Length: 177
Image (cartoon, rainbow, N blue to C red):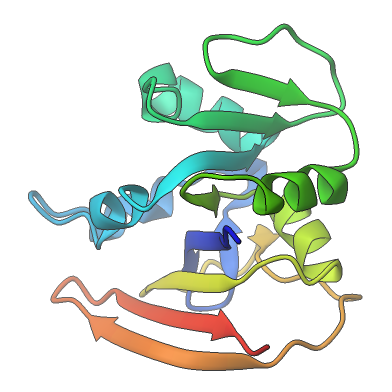
């Protein structure tokens, strides 16, 4: 069975974005030649799940090729129907149903790249198998929290912790079965 992995960066105080979906704090740890294992990770996936607000931000800041590079299916979770663009599908139905369908299919693993609403819906339904969380050394004070209240407790098993000279610490856990 395919697994779904969260690979995401947060501030030390638990935010994945500043107010107005601003991800500029990620620039604090940018370093030429260092991708914090992102390329190695994305080699293990062939499907991406992403919220529409995160998708729109990355589209504006980086461009469409960041997600739809022709090598993976991209599901943008949205409330507004839009036509498919390349391998990017704008999905408006039940996300739990989609994830269960994808996990039972054939292929590489599935990458959830946010946002918080999508992540927390998956957490409520115990659908995330692996957590790779990069902690950026900054306290943002406000913004979009990664973990929201109202989800069930879930035990995790430690895999690794890596430190980088930029101050970033990457934590890797898997869900205890």
